[in-house]
Image (cartoon, rainbow, N blue to C red; front, side):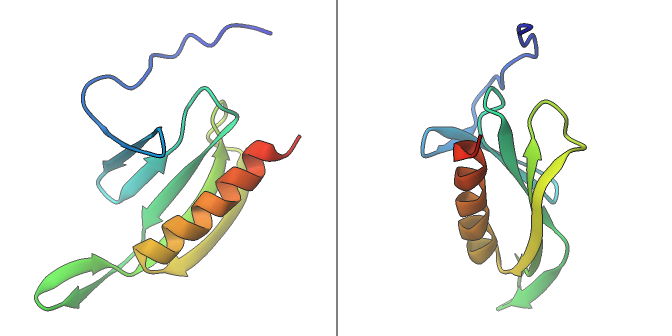
Length: 98
């Protein structure tokens, strides 16, 4: 098996349950790139609540960390909390699968 030579995330970043949680624009990535898959949340639309823009529709994807074009599981949910919770379950199941 060949060695992975991609650089690790550097600088300061958030961690949740010991794994990096990074947001750039409307994309949120969660997971360790050295594992076989990661979670990607894509904010599709927003809603206004009390004058603030909150994520509404979220695309949830568990993708192969070596080949980002390979989608292992995909779905959508309304609300960032529900999408992240469901995505964590999918990611955990994918990491435990052979």
